[in-house]
Image 1: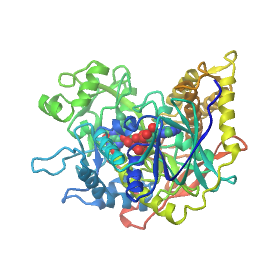
Image 2 (image 1 turned 90 degrees about the horizontal axis):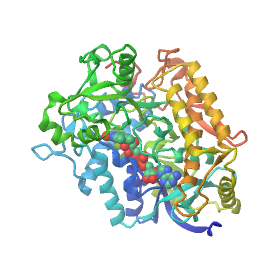
Image 3 (image 1 turned 45 degrees about the horizontal axis):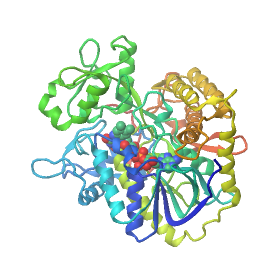
Image 4 (image 1 turned 90 degrees about the vertical axis):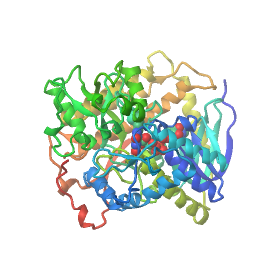
Length: 574
Ligand SMILES: Cc1cc2nc3c(=O)[nH]c(=O)nc-3n(C[C@H](O)[C@H](O)[C@H](O)COP(=O)(O)OP(=O)(O)OC[C@H]3O[C@@H](n4cnc5c(N)ncnc54)[C@H](O)[C@@H]3O)c2cc1C
């Protein structure tokens, strides 16, 4: 039962995460001739990107333009996104989609052969390209084919437990990863290290996310010395299936679906007279909660109605969501409305970075949902995440190539205590007795239910304080966490402890940031501070790890503006 020996590896570029952001960056590394490695705790094709349904935004239609895409994004973000990064993304978006098209991604087509696009929330033009309702699946498979074809090194089913730095935590140098099949520890060094580990929506009990979305990379980066930002901004998607939280894509409303209450009538005209069901997600989620509170829901849900779209369109463009509704809710949307409610979907916060993906720790880069570049500010627009992944995967990948060649020489050496610390952690977890101990699943359920209850769509000081109290209690109980499985092979029990640790760090950061932000902006809606307060709160929250106190602390960072007059904040109406 003793742990096998440690193995050492060295690459030019080390990428944690094999979703769209990680694989797109890997493509830049390998095609530039650098030794590039991708680490993923599941097989790359099981990354959450594969679950994306609705599509990817880019101004590829000649009647559209990137400036409008950028404005919609700035406004959707409730004016707290970083304008330099938003401009860059929207300019690069069309080419990024065409790159994927050239690689062979099977996008849906119009009759004239151009890439088909549908309407999405908060956008002034139907600019969401898609591959039926399986867009992420199509894109991820395409990038995976390219990675294999070009010879990427893959550490698949390796779970990263630590990001390595020098002693002063000034320069990243690689990772310690746990080989899931054997329990062997691997030190994987790189001149440039990318965190592309996705989001942490699993911190809420009711969510649309894969089990693996526990925010490990964000929590590990904070511990390594790279602060996170804007953790208080959590997106609740208006159409999660009532019972399971599984996602019914916004693309369904893009195709013309209605939201109706118990009375069978559409209600969005009260909340967003112009955009109706296609207002931004924060607006629609709040509307649903208010309808449910006013008694116009059934069993805590409202309904998504597609019956008027007709069987043919549903079967052609929405086959997957129809099947999900049948399998998980027992409803065939061709004949009956689907019960839905707001469900945690996306975390706008992540590792703070500039528009080239540099975090605040030298040598550590970040892209995709794990990052806070910040494109989405207070609220992400639907279909802006896949485009963020492929645009900033590409840009950050190129920047890492440059960095690895020009500045990446001085990789700090790995100290023996870096490894022994992880070994001791694992031994201590295995040695904790069951008697008087706490189970991972029990603590995780308490944590996610507490977040659901106290840090949801609407927030108040009292609720947030109670939430923080409960999170801190769970954090204290976590010291007594024990596992039944003491073996080295496929010990998911052990890895569950590490995932829970990440969730606890991020929960603490989320509640503290939400408690401090005394205004309502984007998805952060305070009943006790109902207005946006640009004078005091036009700033990002920074969340850093304090090693002495073993907890997070809050600071602030400025919003990067470009002086574009169009971006002057106005009240956000849809
Ligand atoms: C159901 C659903 C539908 C969606 N639909 C859309 C949509 O239509 N359009 C849109 O724009 N966005 C959509 N989104 C959001 C979007 O899919 C994600 O934000 C995006 O795909 C994230 O990509 P990523 O590359 O950042 O991370 P992910 O795809 O989440 O990949 C994370 C990677 O990190 C690895 N990893 C994590 N922790 C570790 C660790 N400790 N060690 C090793 N590896 C690790 C994982 O194995 C995985 O490979 C949807 C999200 C969901 C949940």
